Length: 96
Image (cartoon, rainbow, N blue to C red; front, side):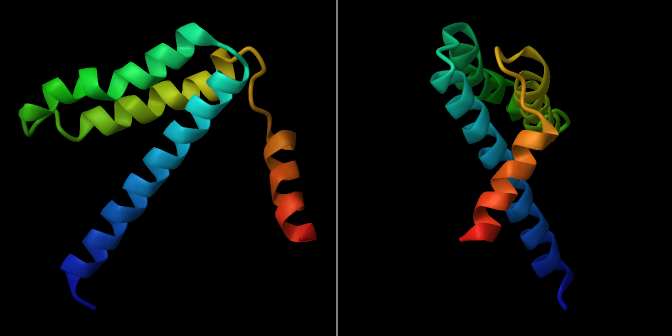
């Protein structure tokens, strides 16, 4: 296979993962009525994209956004996400 094709697939999967985790964090903060965190999670990507002009920092921006979202989901949420809750999601899809 062509190396460019593999790199493109890796990039697309990383973008998909980033937006999935961002969406989950935004959904969770909204459904738990956590207004401060919702604003932080919603405003972080546009604010940090200002610094993505420099090629040296362009890769760090998605990593930082992902880290903030994961920290919210597992640590700072009013009801932190647990592994048991994620396992229950899998069981819902298996039972259908």
